Length: 193
Image (cartoon, rainbow, N blue to C red; front, side):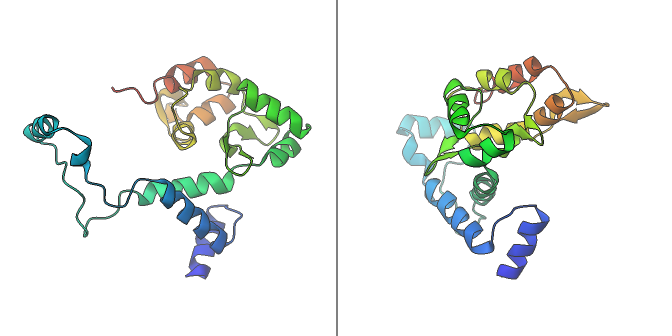
């Protein structure tokens, strides 16, 4: 199995050995909800009745159903593996590591703490930070986790068009697109449609 996993990791461009990646997956799985929660416990009897009346199934997942958490666990592991440490980010930007911490504090870079700061790779380019990053980061709702923001930045958006094709916010910014367009979209993360 580890040879097959190593091949997949290499094809995906992830510079991590199979055992370390499996540790990342295990850690991400532990942080998520229990494997088979009973959604009905989150609602009162009246709420359960109303939800059932409109056709929602709030019963627990059966043992033969695929685990809905698998894709999220894999995404968490990839995000964690591809993230940069403060020292790696400082080296990439050619600055002192204190400048990276200062930018994090000011909201000019984003990251999360996990035995030290981890900075998602999507915000960096080969020669610096993503153009317009500060404008976008100011608009990210505070309650949005790093994985949600990373997914947004790498998912084509119908409102961001390059050469007649929807572009990801990252592609849009790299092509010189107006960061205010991305900021308006990212500000809606977590809001109901």
